[in-house]
Image (cartoon, rainbow, N blue to C red):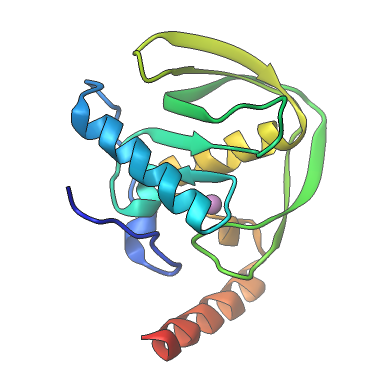
Length: 168
Ligand code: NI
């Protein structure tokens, strides 16, 4: 299988919209393993398949706390949202060393399939709620930069482009 890496903003492929996962086969299982490896190597808590140049509706999450075991969300969808909002500083593996204040709904109910293909529903708030919303944004090609004012987004875009050139 191809070795994958996390795409870095402003890579245009981060704007891909994910297609549903139709069949949970060996290829999907291998992708999930690779995504967990990459996420742990970069010390992230969530990673969407679109971030590794694989536009499939697939997310891995590990908040690294005992009450929240690692999660694989296949074809995830938010089915209910609270009215209350929360602000938090969000990082993203596609934006190294960048934090953006994002307002999101506080509580969500989401549904997804697990690796066995079974659908489940879960209500959540706190960090898991923020993380699921952030990762589902990725599946729609939406990024934390999109929550900035256009001036700040422009500045970040320039900074990241420069950074990428230096690294390469
Ligand atoms: Ni992200």
